[in-house]
Image (cartoon, rainbow, N blue to C red; front, top):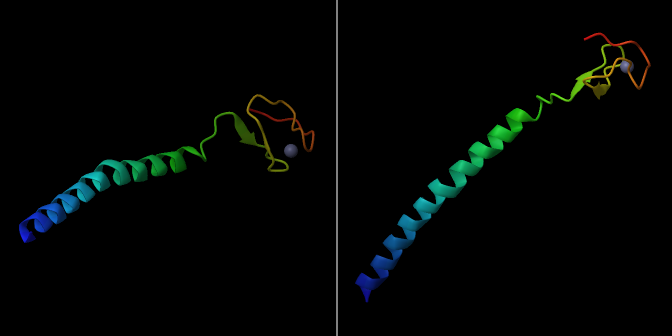
Length: 70
Ligand SMILES: [Zn+2]
């Protein structure tokens, strides 16, 4: 009886560790990766005049209509 309980307990602990290393660590890496990629948005840029976010190819700011350089 006690041996069965210990066996189940040890199995549970081992499986918990395996699940932790297989699921939690990759998830943390994935979350860190997505957080890193968020600020780098290649489709938008900031207007130097009004600091609004405008499309990368825009030649005029849609908020203050100032001419944008590259
Ligand atoms: Zn602007």
